[in-house]
Image (cartoon, rainbow, N blue to C red; front, side, top):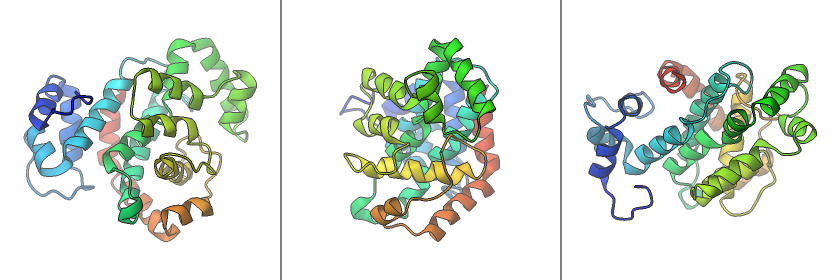
Length: 259
């Protein structure tokens, strides 16, 4: 459906409604304080037309559908629970940061959301397809929390979750923005195509590091990224504070995703 240029909201609504769990997540998201909609959302069609829009609902559905077939251990720093917690919060922060960027540099909010949701997808692939290697990495992260995950992956596996995720996204013909974020979200100096999406995800990951989420190497917000996106640290911090304040809605979505 995403590849069909003639698809419209009714097509998307009919598809989403076939999955009760996904439909419930989207309706709850549309009613969350992030969007400030005061009315009642009773259907996917209303969620699309009144609040979220076609692109946003499509990207939520793409993210959830992409990850659902992958099964990994639930607990630990890169287990399923940690993956979805970080993904849910990162997607929300990444999308919210879009609103602070000047219009001439502003990415598409729906694509930014999907980039934040899927950027650590390589962990799911590793855990699902190579459980022994995943366990070795998992144990190393617990044993050596001071070492960046990327360095541990290179030493133990000879490949990183950024590369693994990008390979799969390329195979699935996902949007170029999503593939680039897979590859570069640990590279604050990246300045190639779709750099604004990469930079937003890096900022979100650095912010969430202070709340014990994700695998960012540091909590420091790179000055070159702030300058590139014309963002001010105080404004960014307010986005994080607002996200944490509304944690009940995100935690509810999280419980549905890991169920």
